[in-house]
Length: 349
Image 1 (cartoon, rainbow, N blue to C red):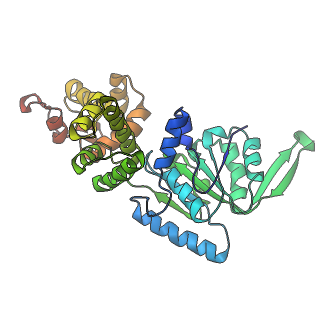
Image 2: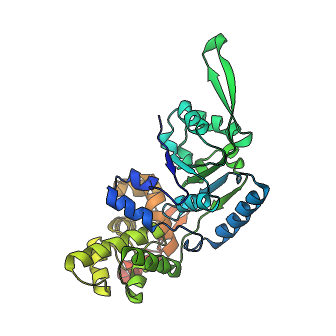
C-alpha cells in the first residue's frame, strides 16, 4: 500500500526530504524554512494572484477549490504552494506521490479516507500508472470511484461516492501527462518560473534569520548568484555556508562563502563540476559542436535524460550552450567562461 500523511494546514514534513533520506533534524529544519503565508512566499507573483482569486471565489461559494496542477523544474516551490493553499482554506492536506501509488487499491484507499473539504497532494503525478490514472478521472470529474470486483463473467462494478475534495498535483515533466488528465485540472495549470537573483537574495535573508545567522548583502549576493535561480539550491548553499562558519567558529562572510562554495566545486556562475565537464567535452572533443545528444551522453558516460533535465536547463538559461537542429553547441560566453584561447576555439556555426 502507498503511504500518505495527514498534515495540518500549517505544513508537515516534506515528501522530497523523505525521498532524500534526510535525518530528523535536517527534515525539521527544511520544514521550518518553508514559507507559512502568502506574504512570506517570494516570487511567482502571477500564480499567487490567480490562486488568491480562485480560493476566495471558492470560499464565497462554500465549495472546495477546483483541481490545480503545478509544473516546472524541481525546487521552485510547488510543494510549498500546496501547503499554503491548504492553510489559506483551513483544510487538511494529505500528501503522497505518483511512484508511491502502486495499485488501484492504493488510490481507492487514499480517496475513500478523505474527509469533506480535504486536499490531496500528489507529487510527481506524471509517474502514475496509466490504469491508476484512469480511475482518477471520475474521481476528479464527478466525485465518484468505480471499482471492479471479481473477474470474468461474474465481475461487477461498484460506484462509491467520494466527499468533495481538491486534488493538487505537481510534476517536473508535464509532457508525460496525458491530455485527458491535464484537462481535468479545471482550477488551472500553472508553470513556475525561475527566480531572479534579487528574489533569491530575499529568500536567503529570510532563511538566514530562521537559522539564526547574520549575513551581509555581499555574502547573500554571492550565494544568490550561484543558486541556479532556485530557492531549494539557495537554502542548501546557505546551510553549507552555515556549517563551515560553525566549524571554523567564524561569522558568515564573503571569505567563508567563497570557501564553502569552492569545497562544493561550485564556480562563480553556479556551475558544478559535471556542468563544466559537459562544456569541456563539447569544446575539446567536438570543437564546440554541434553534436547530437546521444553522442554527447555517450562521451560523458551520462544518461541523456540527466543532460536534458539536470544540466541543460541552467546552461541554456545562462546562454552557455544552444540547441540547434544539428545538436548542442557552446556559445562565445562558454568559451570565455572556460578560459579557452581564441586561437583554440572551434568555429561557431
